[in-house]
Length: 193
Image (cartoon, rainbow, N blue to C red):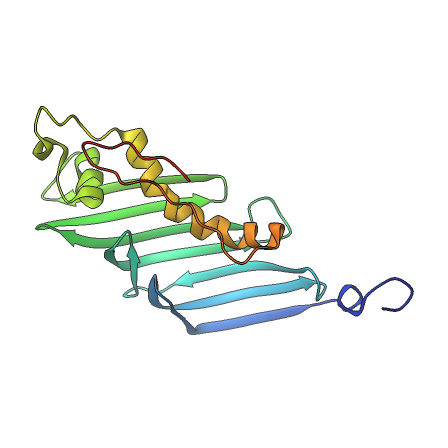
């Protein structure tokens, strides 16, 4: 610590990283390959990361205990700007004979998704199938329908954790951050904890 300024604050960063099809992502949620073009600036104490990571076709990711195959994806990082992380993803899976495609656009303050299936189902039935293993009609008339708002909360919580986790851990200086909805089904309503 020289003159009240620590070494970590005085060392500036100016790195460029180009990794063409050489990034491997291997964790409990994903097994995939990617390309990256990143710039690292800021200081050792507060590095800023900007750039893009392109998710390559054929990767696998597990989301809410369902395995998806990545069709394409893009993660945009911008520590210096507004949203530190933006994700665009197109992936597919199969549940009970339905081939399901997920198109996802997410950032730290929003999650938008579109679901489609072959054979065709309404999006609410596809979402219900992913969450509960049943279409809304299979719940029966006395069980009630899975509300879209509740399903969106449930579906978006892991994405929120994925996108906000690093931001929250860094800002709050904590080791663990999670968003966990309660069980979702015909007889329950999710809540965040």
